[in-house]
Length: 375
Image (cartoon, rainbow, N blue to C red; front, side):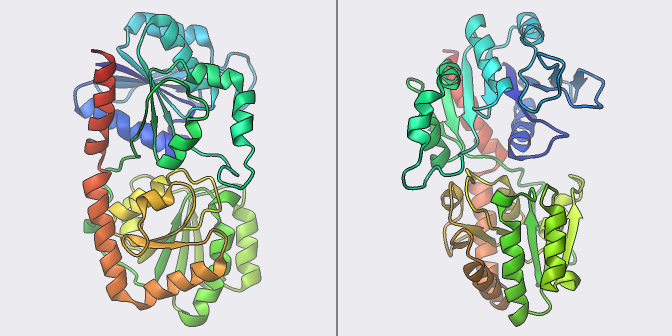
């Protein structure tokens, strides 16, 4: 098949959506499909079209207007030009609420190309009592109009499916989770594993809860003074977090690595003792959970959004109340002090990643939806 993937974000921009599209395109390529990734131009990248393999290329679309706003819509005429030339079999838009994927659905509809949309996210407040989202969805008619152009919808979790169902009236919605390359993220890379090493990977933003993790870590050190905490990733909270580390007096046990190269990341996971994701809200899936599980790490994560669909409490990891530094600290201490439990959870996590989330399995499911639309 000739497949067009539309995404607002793609490498070098990092995040769950870009990682998903990268993994899916790589696997589709391996299965013999021709893949074109449409995304927006990134400042400093001069080549609008880039071949990344014999069967896969990236097309970076100019903004519709010469302004550098984050949500500026793409130049539709550029997309239509490529679409007419390539005669795609399938259009697959990723992330349901930004301009690039919505324009992709519109162009597909006008060109008579079957289309799929994947929802990767849920908003803050989605599960709160009195949530405004059911009412707000009826007010967001332009977005709802474009999403209803899709012939099929995918959600990465039940939480994401529940949310996108507010906007989609007719298309079937299947739950197909994110995937992971279990040969890249593997316990086999473990060399100098530190049994006291706690790892956080992700953007340093409020909703990911890195500040909660720091406060919990202060409590952990009272019982495990040799524990170490490493943050991988960057974000607007970095300076505040470094200041908080100083105020808490835990500088000697905490390090910030910032963004690291993709080549380094698997070994960083493999050499940690456990992984922590203390998200406060709006965690539809958490790609980093799969990376940790595939690397053979027990996971401590907040009981929010789609996380409980991936991590079963006391099976692949431990689930804690969002925002509770006391529960988070207690769970970390439990795993640091109980190697048998840590090993049990790690083994289950690796097994679940291989059996349920390997990109080969996930892509087969997505490919099945593509084929059903071409019959």
